[in-house]
Image (spheres, one colour):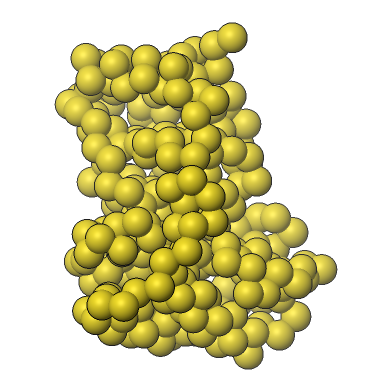
Length: 265
């Protein structure tokens, strides 16, 4: 199967969904907001954008199933599944704050083989396919070359529904505030991971995530020369609850610090 062609065709579907989301963002008056849980929101825009993605991607690869955040289609494929988040950063979207993004990944037997993150604020398409490198708006991207955590800029995400690691998380923030160039939190994990892939951030970690938050970004980082794991160092965090990613040079140091702090009893 030609993953490059699938990736580029999927980007056209994402563009259609993005046009709808952008129009709705510019006319947010009367936005209907529902709570899926405490501080966990969904709007009609999320649901309609997901329907656009599901419809277009179904035509592109009829045998593929879906793992979709809003559940408009969760039929599973035997080999291929699209993992989609129609609006990653819904809280930002609701408040008119960038970034927020569309994230689409294609898995083949649980391996991500194509990934797209479209970030609205800077109008940026990040995309990758297995063996094809990582790209941003037509230009290849690579992870950074920063050699040590103390020289790095780290991104993370604050917990908003799952607080079981909160004490450890606060300790990790304290550590990186004192031992890096600083911490950033944008509110869109898909965007954060894409920024690691293109070298804007040197590392990212977060817990409480879902497959649709990380699928596309995982492939972007790997194809850009970086490494991805869960907090414990296992190499496949797609269906786990936490993720670490960084450039190759700081990964061992970065991951070991996070494991020591975040998984402490």
